[in-house]
Amino acid sequence: MATDWEEAVEKDSVYQSSEKRRPENDLDPRIKLLSVLSIIILILILPPGRWLAYIPFFAIALALIISAKLPFKKVIVRSFSIIPFVLVITIFLPFFKDGSTIFSGQFWIFRISVSQDGIVAMLTILIKAWLCLLSLIWLTETTTITGLLEALQRLHFPAVMVMILSSMYRFIFVIIDETWRMKHARDCRLCGGSRLIQFRSLGNLIGTLFIRSYERSEHVHAAMLSRGFDGTPRTINTLRLRKSDFVFATGFGLVLTFALLMNYRFFI
Amino acid sequence: MPEPVIEIENLNFSYPDGREVLKNIHLTVFRGETLAIIGPNGAGKSTLLLHLNGILHENGSVRILGETLNDRNLRRIRARVGLIFQNPDDQLFCPLVYDDVAFGPLNLGYSPSKVREKVEKALAEVGMSGFEQRAPHHLSLGEKKRIAIATVLSMDPEILAFDEPTSNLDPRARWLLINLLKRLPATKIIATHDLEMVRLLCERTVVIDKGQILADGPTDSILNNLELLRTAGLAA
Image (cartoon, rainbow over all chains, first blue to last red; front, side, top):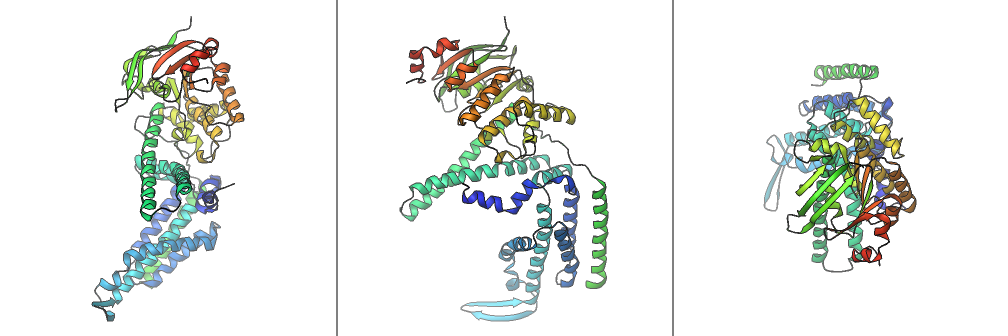
């Protein structure tokens, strides 16, 4: 009998795709990572307000998603998850950025004015973030976590950081399980009681989780030392570039160049 | 006469908060034997095991394979003494089983092909071939314990130390583990309170309680001494 959490985890596509994919036929994760980085950089350098310039990049992201046979609706819905975060940061732009005012009014004692440049800036950031996330979703849905980590390490990302990410992935499920066990134990004995008691027990739970994780890290460190660890992360290199990787890289480079030229000729 | 592989003389250990955990421990382990260390929870069994590869530093004398532990020979000793912890989640810290079993050989500086060979051999020894690409999180406790043993076996240690290997296992997994331990040719030290396993596997037993060794002798005579077991909290 699976718990609610286990069912949710099984349905979550990132977890599934990171565990169940067979990577023999996929592109080398390094190539995918560099491709996505290139798209992101090109999207970021676009000047604000040129709305049509985003069309080629949207088409590229769409092509990648369709060719990987990803569930379209799921991907789009997931990509919208970034909107609240971006809005929180950019919501102030229309009100505080200088520019031609398109609306001005008095609310209670505050004088509010909305500028066109502000709105343009906000929408620009929003659409850039959304397109970048679409590309990143393609990357994460078609690559195993371990493949991605090895790609980072082979591309000379700091080895210590790769180890941290790897440990994070390994232990996040352990910590989630532990949290659920503690929560169930807490629920068993949380009958009524004031709000203060409830919050305090929640605080204790979080604190205990932190302490347990810290002590677990000491045990893991002892286990690593017991197997000869001396501070230098050592890994196995399994990634090999194949012909299909070169073909993709070349083709993708051409597509990006074409998109860039199209943009600068027609849309900007 | 087999040679001594572990010689502990007058070992005392206290935790930083002052709690005395090990008092005046004298123990010699000989090559090829399977030694059981039994005692109640909190007796100091795990702490004693942690001294065998230098995780805890002693105030006394610990000689492993003829050498006193110091900074220079620590890595070499750790390659020859394998320690298997009670909780496999502490021992399996890589995203894939293959990475975990390969961790030890990689740290020993082996070539990729030799690492692969060691990994396959270790997994075969514990009966977990084919589990290389699995994530440790998805395994049952019995499978995790066997993989944890494989992670240490891949370094070909001469001495194996187990901390409560059969705790929390269902009967089938427990029997699989006991049979596995029987097959391993290394010198084995098993800290446990599974007395049935001790009777099956270990010729010699050491009884420890409150940090002190109460008895050290052939398993049969120790386990038949009900008075001794009662004192140590191991029998009703």
